[in-house]
Amino acid sequence: MITIIDYGVGNINAFVNVYKRVDVPVKIAKTKEDLLDAKKLILPGVGHFDHAMTQLNNSGMRDMLDELVLGKKVPVIGICVGMQMMANSSDEGQMEGLKWIDASVRKFDETKIHQVTRLPHMGWNDVKPVKDLELFRGLENDSIFYFLHTYYFECKNQNDIMAVTEYGDEFASAAHHENKYGIQFHPEKSHHYGEILLHNFAKL
Image (tube, rainbow, N blue to C red; front, side):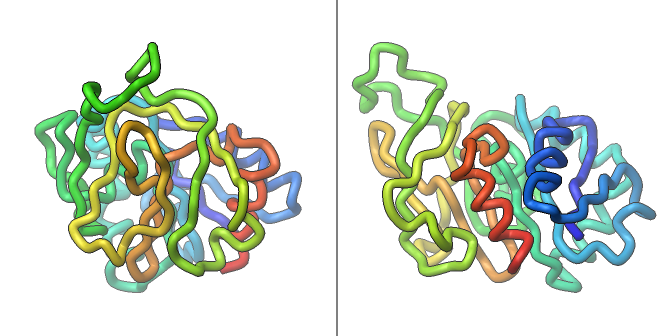
């Protein structure tokens, strides 16, 4: 059972549809009671960092999520801004992050980007795993995913980097620490590559 955290930010239905296609049951959590007995969590996110953090903090689920993720070590995957929220802080806003992974969120340096349209980083790009983890099983070679972001995840511990992508410089497009996973790209918009990854998460 996959529990998707619905705090008013992110396209919940897109994830539900992916898991229906691979025959994995899904539950949507809008209250802390909905989180009881969660076995795997998805934290989606789009938009501005502070807005997403405010929405989550006001949802009534924050304390329960900390208990599940930090206390009970329930596997969780943060997606796009959901990944960025797992960091300590973000250059995009003033609020503290969840501090689930020791990282900061930084803005891309536009002077290093050669594309005509520099920011946001939008469209398909390569994702190269640097750790041998089940999440990327079957996606080790020539996998591309859809991105839409202006800020990136900077791990304090290089061992937490799970996959890298090139955009101006190389950045961590996926991170992993213990039971916590973060991916900057959108698997729900990445066709069969994203379907494989989300199915892999269900099988962890």
